[in-house]
Every structure is written in C-alpha cells, then in structure tokens.
Length: 287
Image (cartoon, helix red, strand yellow):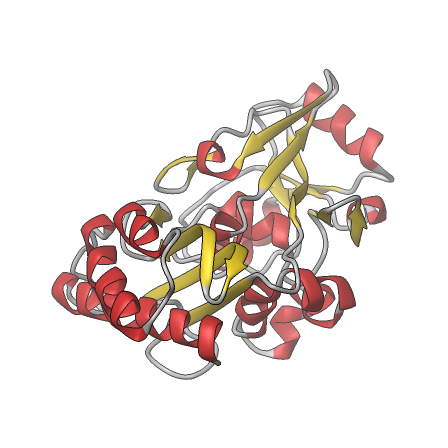
C-alpha cells in the first residue's frame, strides 16, 4: 500500500543531505514524482521511505554562467520550455521537453527526476548527451561533476552514490551559428514513450555548413543512450549536403542495439534510427 510508505520532506538542501547521510540505503528520492508513482503502483520498486526533495527550492533554476547553461535538478520541463536561455542556447532540449507528456506532466516532472530514473527512453537524455552535459551531484562530503556519458553506467543504473543527490546539470551554450534538433517517434503524437528518439548538435561552424564538432545521440535503442560515433565522423569538417546527411544517417544504425518489445521490433527501430537521424539533421541545417 502506498499509504504505508514514510515520506520525509527536507526544509532545504542541507537538510536533504543530512537525511541521506543518516539513511544512505533506506531512502528513495522523489523529485516531481511522475515516474515513481507509476513504479510504486506497479510494484517495480518497494521502498519503505521516500525523500521528497520538491521543497528544496534552491534546486529549481535555469541560468547562465559564462558560456555555460546551468539547470537545477528541480527545474520542470515547463521551466525549460519557457526559459529564454534554453530557447536561445539549448533548443534541442526545449524540443524534447515539449514532447514529454501533457502540460500537466510538464509542470511537475523535473530534469533531475528524468536523470535519476535513468530510462534509455527518457526524452531529455539524448539532448543532454548531444549537448555534452555534465551532471553535478552533492553529498555531505562535497560535490562531484560527472560527464553525462560516465553518469549512466547501464540500464537504469547510474554513478550516483547512495548518499548523493543530483543537484544540477550544465553544458556549453549553443551559439547562434550552431545547429541542433530533436526528433521522437512514439505510438501516438503525445504522451507516448519513445520508440526511438534522436538528438543532434553541430558546433563550430567555420564556413558554409561545415562544422568542427558533431554529436548525435540515440535513445531507446540500447540499455542506455548511445552516441552514433561513425555518423558523427561523417558530419565533421565536411560541407553538409543532403547526400552527406543520408550517408551519416545510414552509419548511425551501427550504434543501435535495440530489442523487440510491444512498441516495436528491433529491425523497425533500426529503420527508424536512419529516418530520424536524417530528419533531425535536415531540421537542424535546413529547417
């Protein structure tokens, strides 16, 4: 029964870290609660105590420091969608946030919660990979900054220690000449778990449509988010034509190792990867 679970509500960040320090193996962290309620209902997790960090208002922000965008763990998807900073400097993340459920969910679900849930179908994760984000964690001992590709270790597994909280993410702001896009395929247009989703970021435009760096991240096609390395190489230091984009999209499937499930077969997902990578590049460059 959900009513049999104790819920702890810290006053602030220090209070939350004290509670984690005192109960390192006995607390399940709740942020917006949109994922954990379903997991509790379905019996996927059976914690005896929850740590509800929603009152920790100091973790809810979107701001810029130098050339980096910083987003607090308790920033909601609506915060991301409506922030001028993310609209100007992290638009693939904004595009993903707009597709995470209905507006009611966007008002409650948090970026930190999506990170902590660690689902390979988490819509915000491919954009964060493509943006080369760093996850900031904190415990009583201090803070750690973990590159996002090291933060996720396997299916629903992270490098988060039992006495740590995710407190923020940060990444280099996209410049005006940078390009990027996010694409998702679900079983319906809204409120659907991703069958496949793709985020692309192209940085360092030198001349025409030639870029010094390309990052392409694939979601829902492996136990965790995958970078499409061969695809990225095909896009770097070359004038990006539609022919180059088609070739790169075909190469992206090399890094997809999907499974068959009720939402789609492995082969279908591989076919979708090719289509979505091409569409995301087309949107980024010519859209």
